[in-house]
Length: 124
Image (cartoon, rainbow, N blue to C red; front, side):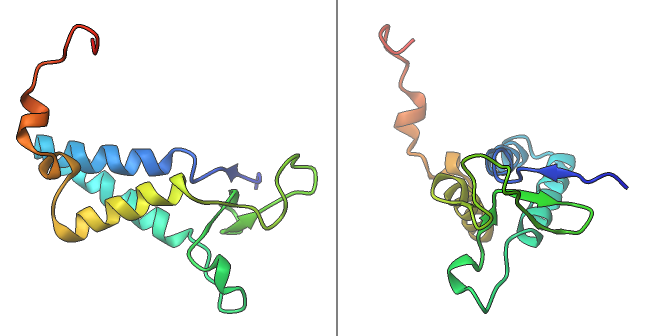
């Protein structure tokens, strides 16, 4: 079986927020089901470690889907074996998971005047 390496945190975070907002805005059960699948995937590939608590809940830079474990290579220029995606990557995921738990959306939390004010010529 071929080794399948992916960088799960590069786009999954944005896809999760997009699916969440789209499912709510469109009331589409199919999109909501895909959002649920992506949440399941993201949560399952988070690192779990009692030995290294600083890594618990992190997203490693790459993932081997065949072995279902974090993956790294010393030939991976600029990335060490213990490199994780952090900061902006994880914040989108935790924000969206929080929105799901609160049963709300970014759009619902945005004051209506902001959404209803026409863009100025400079903004267009």
